[in-house]
Length: 324
Image (cartoon, rainbow, N blue to C red; front, side, top):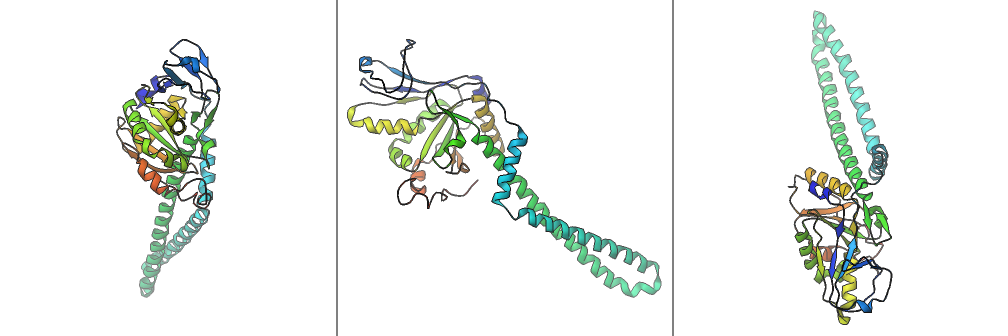
């Protein structure tokens, strides 16, 4: 998938049949070099193909220091598991206590074995030594397991922070990080060849309204550098439907190198082939909800996710599913 870093822009082609329309986007008409932006009447462009260009800058943004990301991840880990540090402190205290008791018991055992008159105390000393060693072993195991869980959680949160810093282009003038959508939208990231993204676009058509009601927005990332074609048969009856389809697919990733690096790391951790098309769905809070190889389950999203508006909003915002 690292070959995606070699291209410097992504172009989303929206082929429309002739119809006057107005979009708050920038259009390069037939490569003429003339741009029309804002809500501009373009009636005179009837029967001409429109090309919606979303430039994806391949240069990397100013890197944030790993220490900053690590500190944020550690703070979030403490918030999510506030009693873990207390448990680990007591585990260490019990290990130290058991180790000290075992040391004392060992010296007593050596003294008893060296003196024939103290042989009657050996069974009792061995019993105490066994208890001390057992306590040390148990609490050492508990501390080891807790430490592994802590490191895994911090690593996951660090990856999520790296993801939240990746940039998206909303329109020709607005670029925001993924973190700007926390509490607003459930993002679904698609990474794969252009044909895979085009097919995902077609499969999502019957579920457009349901996905938008649940705050789902799609981020397509073509790994082969080929622009996916999103075709519409535009007419007045379908104008509102097409507008909603464009809203669902309006986001475009920029800084392809950073996106490629992050996706490659996730695929490596999941032991997924770099050539495999994948999807990744995020919760409202920005944490990873689910992922998989192949096409995203649009129908499952509509069934499982609560709407972001109405009587079910707010109360069920955290019911996005478990965190991976």
